[in-house]
Amino acid sequence: MYIRKQRLLTPGPTPLLPAALHAMMGSDIHHRTEDFRKLYKQVLSDLQEVIGTSNDVIVLVSSGSGGLEAATQNFFTPGDEVLVCSAGKFGERWVEIMKAWGMKATVLTAPYGDVVKPEAVEAALTQNKNIKGVFVQASETSTGAAHDVKAMGLAVKKTNAIFVVDSITGLGTMPLDVEGWGLDIVIGGSQKAFMIPPGLAFVAVSPKAWKLAESAKAPHFYFDLKKEKKNAATGESAWTPNTSLLLALAEALKYIKQLGMPNLIANAQMLATATRAAVTELGLEVFSSSPGSSVTAVRAPAGMDSGVIVKEFRNRFNAIIANGQGSMKGQIFRIAHLGFFDFHDLFAVVAELELILAANGHPVSFGKGVAAVQNVYAEAALPKEALAVS
Ligand SMILES: *Cc1c(COP(=O)(O)O)cnc(C)c1O
Image 1 (cartoon, protein in one colour):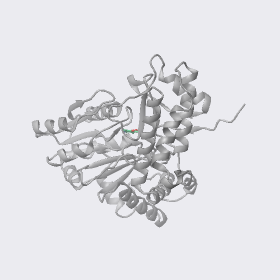
Image 2 (cartoon, rainbow, N blue to C red):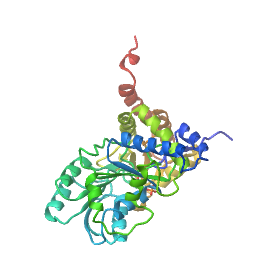
Image 3 (cartoon, rainbow, N blue to C red):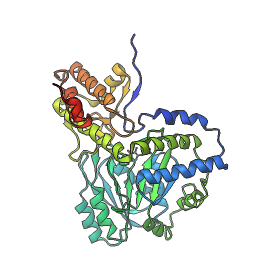
Image 4 (cartoon, rainbow, N blue to C red):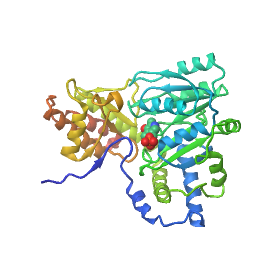
């Protein structure tokens, strides 16, 4: 027997910040007290700071998908014309939500690994002036691709439509200028770059979106964003909140503010860059033609099921990495970078990947992938002086 510590390396849930985990133990707090109101107000203002917006941020007790649904039912009316960009499993989730709410959706589809081009969004908006909302993933976690939400946002901004961005793995992995780019609704989730367990969704709402909400007729009761906004002004949530997760979130936000959101983003970007370099050195192919920094999707070598790689990580190293979703299952595996990940994690993942590939018939000269990560680290992350050897 030997020791194999468990390591969670998926693009949600992600590794937990220890301080946040410990804070959850203080959760015998009542939500209609001054202690709670203080906590809630702090969390809401820190979320605004970290997301980089003065728009209202609403916290919901749900996984990220609840935020997606709330962003639909609070701003639209069944039968409304909307535009959906779909480039993966999460884009398909938007399509399903539109169907569930009886929206008339035009879908711009890109093949898995690819992205929907901003020009296509602009053309669709020019063609149909009745479109009330445009929906997209900033980061399509299922393929590792990132959309150009800046160019899309600037196109939507010129119209009466609102831009609804599933930023669940975009937040903390790519710069998002919420107000400058016209990202009217920005949705986040607790179990991604926020370093805490699943169970909270965040929805940042622009004045343009609130205006549209006034005429929206889709029914809603529990996810009532207007009600939440009104209650938040007094430091309370409409319903019983998830106090333990809010305590965790307060700690995580404190940490992210100390680190600085730009540095959290740079951290993910650096790890993604190093991962792409490593897998390329190992003769593997990055799945997406527009790779983002939340997660890197990698094609399994020809003739090898990616599930074998995922299973080997689990069995040999007790490390949980993600397989492909849907029809991508068996084709790709995904290495996450969002949130509480560091170079130590990546060195281990790449060294383990080399061992797993070699054990399964993909020739590897040990250390090649690791050296690629070392080179990225040495060039970018270390102070130059530390490298001077005389
Ligand atoms: C994780 C994720 C979601 C939300 O999934 P939940 O399981 O509901 O939290 C939505 N969109 C993207 C892009 C995601 O990565």
